[in-house]
Image 1 (cartoon, rainbow, N blue to C red):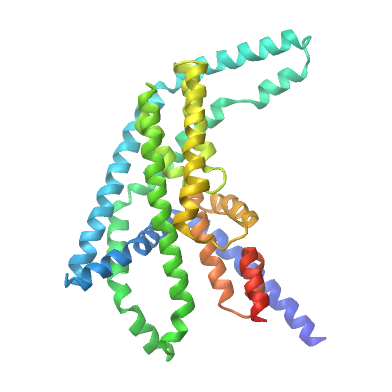
Image 2: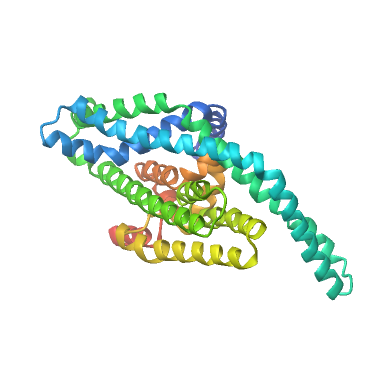
Amino acid sequence: MNAVHTRKTSAIVIAAAVVVIIYGMQFAKALLVPFLLAAFIALMTVRPMLWLQKKRVPAVLAALLIVLVVMLVLTVIGIVIGRSIADFTAALPGYQARLDRIVADVLAFMAEHLNGDESIQDLGDLLNPGRVMAFVTVFLNAMRGVLTSVFLIFFTVVFILLEASQFKTKFVAAFGTDEGGLERPRAFLVNLGRYLGIKTLISALTGILAWLLTWSIGLDFPLLWGMLAFLLNYVPTIGSIIAAVPAILLALVQLGPAEATGVMIGFVAINISFGNFIEPRLMGYGVGISPLIVFVGLIFWYWVFGPVGMLLSVPLTMTVKLLLESDEETRWIAILLGSERDAKHAIDEA
């Protein structure tokens, strides 16, 4: 009886601690998000830094070279986003008015041919393209807000990279274990870094092709749509759809139905090519998380960290899964969060 009571008390305490931690992360997201972004950038760049060190480049210089390249890229992204948001926001009321007229005409046509069915009005209330445009503005403003912390990200990445080469020695000295105890976290960090690196490459190519597509068709703000495709390609499942919709709507308003259809076909072709063929070949493995958990994690991290949490949802969920795997009492939760392959591997081990 006492053992049952103790387990119930322990479960309540753990649940309360989790709730406190989650709300604490929400409260401190302005500070946590730049640090998380810096940590994931460091994971992607640690291998190039170690390669430079093998070429006898001093550790400090190697870290600075890598980080300077990354910060240059982030600064360019921030400038492009800032200028594009300003121009797009200024032009948005005109686009919105034209889009509303198009929607009103379509609904009037449907009501006329459906004998004035009242459900058409309900459909008009449900279909509000302005929400998509508003989400784009909110998302890009959130990204611009994070990138204003570029110096904090810069110094954090530098110190993480400098610490990386010394971490193994410190871990062994602190916990009195051999290097074998580092195998699982090392494998996880290697896989996570590889995932982030490949995802960044695929996202960059997706953004470039989206920019070329919208520029070639004469759409306004092609850099904005390319940047949006690049950023939202990190978002699993729905990111590519969200990136395509505003460009399609703008093409409909600015150029017409034929051009909007062409933009839609172009985005579909780009995302199918990369998502179904190129990316799986480069990855060589899945992210090790159930597709349902990927989607739930997307919603959860969006709630915790806002729009930037969508970009970080997969690596954050993978990190939580690793932490759960490290303890025998919570390993069963990690198995439920994982993929079918992980479950079969656990059965084979048992």
